[in-house]
Picture (cartoon, rainbow, N blue to C red):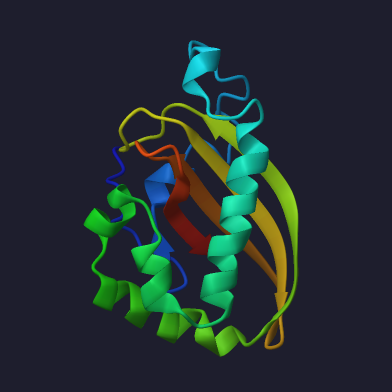
Length: 158
């Protein structure tokens, strides 16, 4: 079955289903095999991407949905308009309420994802609690952009 990037919706909000297909089943490349060390901006891309993800998620947590779209990767912005992104978050994320806690479950690196161009990706999952939903799992994919910054390429909350 072929999955197209950014086409599915789950729980009313899904951006980048294809970015998580295969990764959730453990097929992500943990070692960045084949990628020259010099191509990585930091010796630990997971750590750098995780810090970027936490900052981006804080923007979402603050209800700054349009700003979170502005801060996302080019791939993300081409896949969903700002208006649709804001609307999706208003309908799905806002009702969950304020953030109570967020803890990293996993972070996996890979250089290729179904339906996405080859590149440097880190797919992270967080155990998250909100005032109106005690237990949720957020899956966030960050990619290394041409400017050397890690930016959101996908967000999924379940």
